[in-house]
Image 1 (cartoon, rainbow, N blue to C red):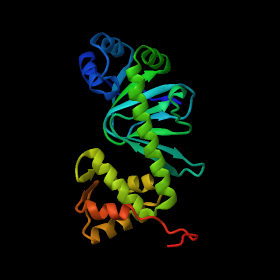
Image 2: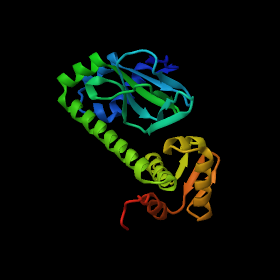
Image 3: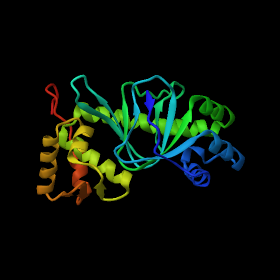
Length: 242
């Protein structure tokens, strides 16, 4: 794994402000925050930058403060397979202590991102001295596991329209808006495991039904209730008695 050098490191005062806003560190005292400020790195990673590559071994934890990060793998044939897109206050990286793995995985900034970076040694020291931090980390990783399980279930039991509908709803919730921005049709296709042409056709079908409006890297959800109904539809298995 190679961690690409971050393009813009924050000034100490600005860094302290952002660290204090991270949910995982909210139980720390002022003195503990000062020590955390000393041992961690927090930097801006610009949109489109791949800052994590599966080339050299190492352990590091990323905590996403702002923006979105896409984790993906490249098949032997060169095809990109999106694993997940992460939003603010999520943890990821290569850290056996937390059971987080990035085997053969790339991390790319979908938006301009603000990311805190911790080494295994510093994280261990923090967890041992501050159990509240460990509990918050468990909460965050637990939510991440639940999301991964839901994603696997969608892949196994739901068709492309349902997967895409669920993705639009999730992105809308993450962006706290009925307008989903910043993703191309290719990005959406990779996130639900299909081809761009298929994703575009499904989006056009949703548009023709009056459920969404489509613009350039912009999709407005017009009827969340009906989109949710589409997202709940499961594939009928051959051995199901319906």
